[in-house]
Image 1 (cartoon, rainbow, N blue to C red):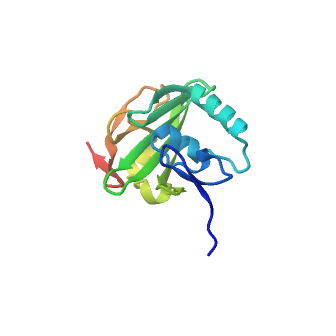
Image 2: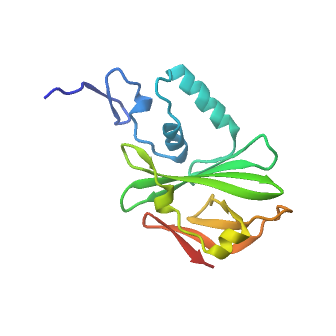
Image 3: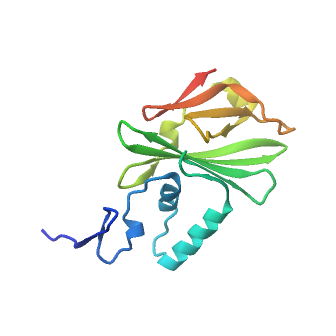
Length: 181
């Protein structure tokens, strides 16, 4: 059986010789996991560093300790939030990306990725709870937590006033569950 030659780095990561360590490490926090998720095939180390610097500079909030990132976009009150939810029992991380667009009213586009030591897999349909028709018809957007594990549901209003709905999504034991307040 043929095997690959590996280089072991001081941080403990192993990487096949010829590949940069950035392609082989196990992400440890929300920023490194997000950058791992953004990797592009064939990207040079210089290109990757330039892109990562540009992305890092775009964050208005970068709270690595609490697993939360937020960036302002050029269009007024639109933004992207990224939150890391960690299942301590399984060691699996969940990266929740929330793209919020506001004009008259706000809306969200969300993606949830399940990440283990080897890969991140898109799992939004599997993990995002189904909303009751009363909430869907009313219109809402998500507000990710900077602290804690509860995602707020915010009513989409023409005046963009932030009114919380009587439901929230709680992360527990690797699941996102809709609960009534």
